[in-house]
Length: 150
Image 1 (cartoon, rainbow, N blue to C red):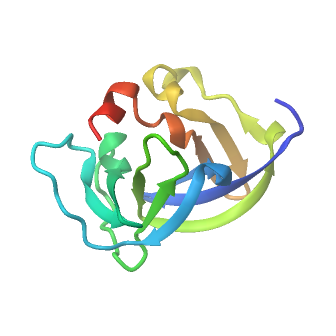
Image 2: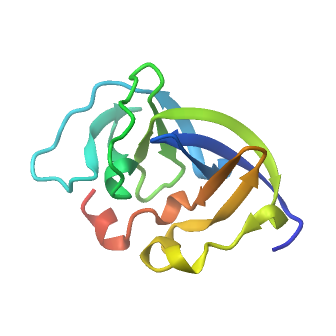
Image 3: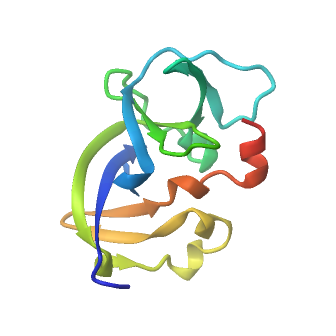
């Protein structure tokens, strides 16, 4: 990978660290009550009113088939709004940790054991001081077919 710098937003889901390019983020919202939509895909937690528009909210625990081992503290739960024009959505995370500048040359490839379907939205792994951060591509978390359901 090149020596290009990147600013990432680091957040937690079930005490696991994830990161996304800050350029993929439009805004970070405090958690607010969601309106559930009947018969929606199980990873769609509900919708909120965002600047006069309906914004679907994705539960990454459900999308990534993670057990809910950490109960969400609504004071710390945040909604990260993706910076997309054609298919905007929010993702629910347990806690936003920090924004950090990283060099792209510290991003390691995804190990063979986790390649496959997840490779679509995992850009790589980053080793920081005492943690490993899974670098996600917010734009490709949903397939084209899933985006049509929103």
